[in-house]
Image (cartoon, rainbow, N blue to C red; front, side, top):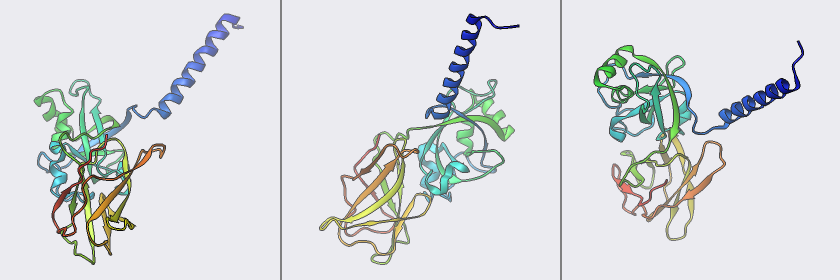
Length: 257
């Protein structure tokens, strides 16, 4: 039976709307993505202090211990420090808010993007009893999206690697990475002549050089969104002192929204 002109126009309009919604979903940066999440087996409430990002004990306690290992989202270390809102999909147990976690480790499971700390896994639930039930499940269906990291009253901070030894080697990890962008490059510059050296990402969030510049050092960090459309260098207010010491932390004096 032939369609009337009115019915045909309505059908075409519906198809156009569906195509527009599909295109928007493909490009929507704030849309949720379906996946699964597990939790660290036989672990305490917080994360691990031996994560692949190189955060050490800081990686177990950052964000109150709401942390996660990631598989594809680890991105060879580029994903270290990124924040995600993760919420489970069982409406009987799970809240609409879910948990906001920081990537501090690399981990893998079948079709599983997140290996959460027990604390973060339980925080997806509505109640304490529901949290216990979720933990008993072990693996749950979730949806997630990237969100801005926020650390009130904290500036971006660097922790010097304990193996650092001037003038042969300098390594450090970046703490309190803020905002919704990745740190894709780091430079160290001599403050006197501003000669800069591009550092290597040795693993995770650890940046290194085998010939560190001398004198007080100015740090430069290159922030980029996942599409590379919004990029900028950030130069901290505070320098790394000339007599920097292995194991010490240094406040950069800057925050990034």
